[in-house]
Image 1 (spheres, each protein chain N blue to C red):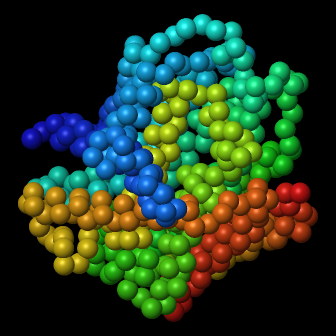
Image 2 (spheres, rainbow over the protein chains, first blue to last red):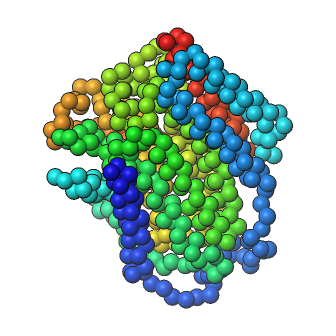
Amino acid sequence: MVWAQVAVYAAAVVVLGAAFLVISSLVRPSRFKAEKFEPYECGVPLIGDNRDRFSVRFYLVAIMFILFDIETVFMIPWAVLYKPLGVAGLVEVGIFFAVLGFGLIYLWRRGGLEWD
Amino acid sequence: MTPWLWLAAKIGFAFAYLVGAVPVLIMMERRISAFIQGRQGPNRVGPMGSLQPLADIIKFLTKEFVVPLRADRWLFVLSPLLVFVPPMLGFAVVPFGNQYGDELLQIANLDIGVLFSMSVLSLGVYGITLGGWASNNKYSLLGSLRASAQLISYELSLGLTILLAVMIAGTVDPVRIVQWQIEHGWNLFGGGSLWRLPLGLMGGLLMFICALAENNRLPFDLAECEAELVGGYHTEYSSMSFAMFFMGEYIAMVVMSGLITTLYLGGWHFPGITDPTDHSWVGALLSIGVFTAKVYVLLFTYVWVRWTLPRFKYNQLMDLGWKVFLPIALFNLAAMAIVGVILEG
């Protein structure tokens, strides 16, 4: 029932967004002129290809994000129940935390966080 | 009224609240910016310039939409929608008011609401990345790469600070988090315990800063800094598609402020103004008013910060996210666990 409500809302949102795009497509002009369709590079002739290689740093950040984000997700159930779990839960999640912390320290010392 | 009619009414309200916030925010942003910089700001269209957003909308509607020839046509058309939809969806679980009769003023009362909005809000990065890549423009590509790297870096700290509020309240149901804060005090002030006071303050502040970064707002707006990248990931966009990026960004600000309000600032309740047991329409309207007031105080702070702090360099931005915020957020969580289990257990 609740998820049906979410689904109805999601559908309504998509329809609303699509409606914005469709309405403007009915109103606006469309006149062809070759220069309009060039990629914008401040008006000078294009240099090189746009599907170029990019810095591996961005890739590394994404990998690190996945690792740390999964560990965050694992902490959510514990965060809700940390009081009933008491000291035993604290010790267990402490070990988990330590692994996460060492991972961050390792990354830091290996220079994984340096951007230059 | 039947449940489905209620749902329709609430969806209508949410659309008006979120999409209607965009012109208000455009006006707010421009007038406050002008005030801070000692300028006049827009004051020609309508009384005190109040019809300026309407003029903007007409302009957006009547401008030509250009798909660059080498662009990936499908993704180029689709990605504005991918930017617009996730923040709208994130509002589904935010309790924007108390109750009217038996009906909670929340679109869907999910018991895992906080997790839902966390996951849905992070989908916005797809629209930005795909939009920048599909434009086949070097500025757009750089902007979208920067945006995605930045979003995922700050998302970690954001998730951890959300988790702190969840730990203080002991639940991931937004309605019950608000309820808990009504009984014990705002999570920002630790929820009634002196031990938790510094942790709550730290968490609330960190969440706001991460929200700035998540919404690509100054001082974290490197994804679209006009001095280097023209328009960043939406350089090639025009007309309504550009407006969709624009609206998505503003709606994300509203929803993020709503989330901060719910998690740290006591939601729709303010002592002396709203009464949690008052389920009449007066009480419902008052609670919506209090929620709106809190959200707009945060939105004012967004604009205020914009003209107070200069933009970061990219390496500073990444350093701040990974070397400062992430360790602080982790430490905060660990301290909360120790306080909760040992000192108060």
